[in-house]
Length: 215
Length: 348
View (cartoon, rainbow over the protein chains, first blue to last red):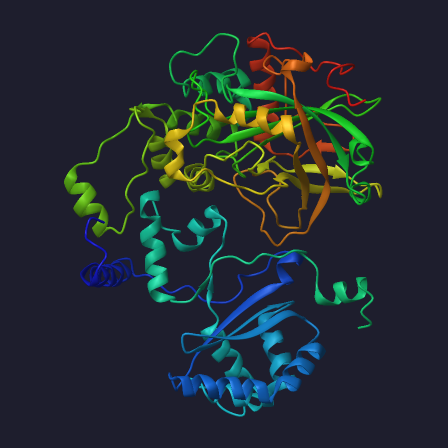
């Protein structure tokens, strides 16, 4: 666009994105892992949980650090025993607590196992974030699963053909792909752009067994 | 019925896509390239997945051809393009076989008719010019990006027609989007090459598995920064390879991805998910230029259907059609069949 990259241009882009979302009656795509149709789709799936902090100051971030530090043993022991999590990490970015993980199997099963195993630890974390789920979360499992799903970032395929298929199924002009993408990104501020796997297709259980890790 | 469309018709359609000035006895696609020699050594796990002779370990001499995809009679290494890597394996005591790969991971057609259709869309035409109003008002309001630029002096291209075709033909989208994102690599040894189609690999357990192959450069993928493109000559990739092989080898790993139930086996327009299991099947080491060794790849036939025992084609119509078209093209240009590698190319 020929406008200089300043506040007017930013405003125009926001207006245009909303206009096209309305004009095309765009529905936000759901976050979380894409449906699995083959065995390897069902392992090393990703979750990108984004939780905005209530207190958006350094004090709020300090509270979050303390809450997580206070229950590291609960978290690590819980994840060890869930047995389907390859990697999980908590990070604070711009007043959001992020929990990113690679896990095996069904999302709902993962969250159910997760919260039943380390629900107490998670209560201390989610009470610091905006619009928390009903607490204690391990007594409101279904609500908690839905709460996590709503905050799990949209996963965009890294393959260009699959990307076009997902965001622009009605598209008839390839030039419009950036617009279809912008409309979705207007609805979904947080997105996963790609996830590298060094050993695609293997579950935690298979790796632990092959490495003779004793699990 | 698509089976009624012959390789002659498909090759003729493809010829329409070539810029004027085709030189007799040269290829109608991937016209410019260089020959190199080297060897392939299967990984220690390859034989667990494939019963083919070249996957059993040991050194297999190879003749390879790196190429630019364009059929332009003028060479343009410094333009974005779909590059190719054709490898001819010479397993000791066995018949030679080929693996053809390109830098786009999918094909833009699923049937012979679609091949004709997309070839027709790709016929070079004057590049349409958008008005100031379209470029500065209409397109920005539609949140469209500025149109891609073409190299200086280019007034005709098949790309705009292809992009328009892909808009209304979803099966061609992945091919066109990947093609539109083509880079100029710093070297033919710094880009990934996909064998595109599904093949059936016979394992030592007697099971035939659907697989797809890709050559991954050991040095990694590296494009030329756009600001440096004007400094590069039209044959810089050939020069770079000569310099590279004078000081070191160029290496690629062969990765074999295993298909799963529900994956497209006969449709080369669709990629398989990155989550599929894959196996490192071996290392291709390119050591020297072919020409000084008396090996002329310009006439040599490479064919995606020339497969070894233990690797079979899938039901992919395009794979079979390409086999026929390459064979026909080879005959038309007076190319040679697969030479028996005794001397220069053989690893001693």
